[in-house]
Image (tube, rainbow, N blue to C red; front, side):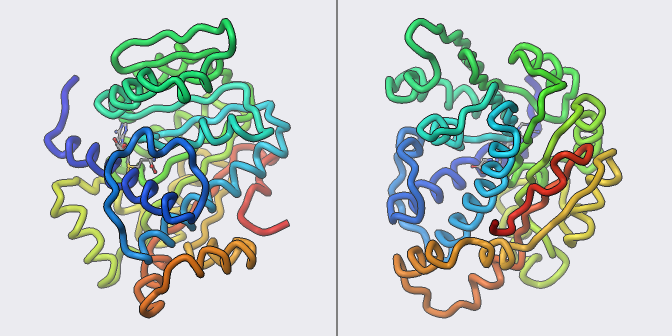
Length: 315
Ligand code: SAM
């Protein structure tokens, strides 16, 4: 594999996301019995960061849940730039079952995820049933309905061949997830990926969580922080506004797209749940959290009309 030097920095952003998720889970923001297998770090993060991750995980989950309900599990989930995300394992413990769950990330990341799964019975047991077998290579893992594979998302031929190895069904309703991933991918490569998905899949939803409103001073600080770590932010031009976020999908063959900043997403979480987590840690003042929420967004795009109502509004 040919790597850009900045790919290494992008790969490292997964460690940061996983550490933050682990920290928030330990403090009780949400339940995740699996993240601890992937993260050893016990460093405590600021309350604003924990609440930010809570809104992020809840926001994505709300969309996934609506999709699963609507398809009755007759669907696929494809997690792009999955990192150490544990959604697959968490779903296995619920009544929601899906036909196929596919995870893609750089081989360096999937190799570490494969290794951890292989070493832990509690994880492996969620991938194969009694006599189902699990096929493993250093970077890829294939179970009966779970596939984790190393690939560069900028290389569509490779993505296509990996999805075929995962027995993807292009005619089955599919939800794509990208949590803080597209911002690292060059605008043209990203458009090609989104176009390719729109051409291949018949009915799909894309849930994208990432930075927005990057053209103000707070946005500058956020971007400089990432650049300082060596990340190329090749996709940042789509993170300027909710409109640029929506347009990226509409310009790539998607039927429609909606976008909300995280202030709106947070407000859509049930009042009881918000009150519960707001008691976990005190915030000195709400200003920093508000700024953070204004600079991240959730975008939901759809192909066809069946799934245009997947959103964050409370039913
Ligand atoms: N989605 C995970 C989460 O939210 O916990 C991980 C987020 S992390 C900030 C970004 C992830 O995107 C990293 O794991 C990185 O390796 C992956 N990524 C970025 N560009 C990629 C590319 N071109 N191909 C494959 N994976 C990529």
